[in-house]
Length: 114
Image (cartoon, rainbow, N blue to C red; front, side):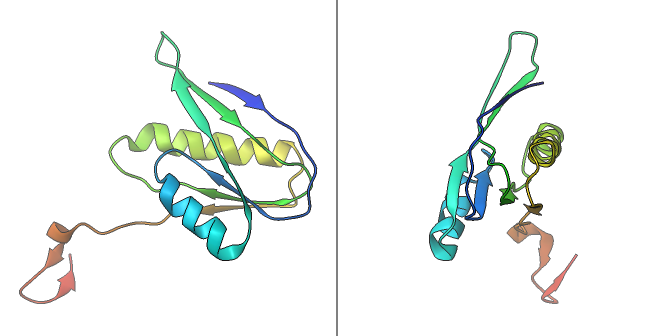
């Protein structure tokens, strides 16, 4: 994987939106009054993942990633983003991983989760 870093300095907490759920990250940033940066991803011809992480030094970072179909690549993107934030001396890094239950996982007759 290739990581490209964009350095900056700020004291406002920062939300890093991974590509799985950008709308959720945007809504969180607007509600909390935090800055938001969308992490760009792509792939090379050999199927390796490329991430462009706009990391800010000396600030708190919240990384938003919701798992869905391609879980292996999404977990690797999340871990690499967290590692990048720590290498650039973010004061704290918090992973926000919302899990949305699908309707077919809910037992309709008993009203309980399977």
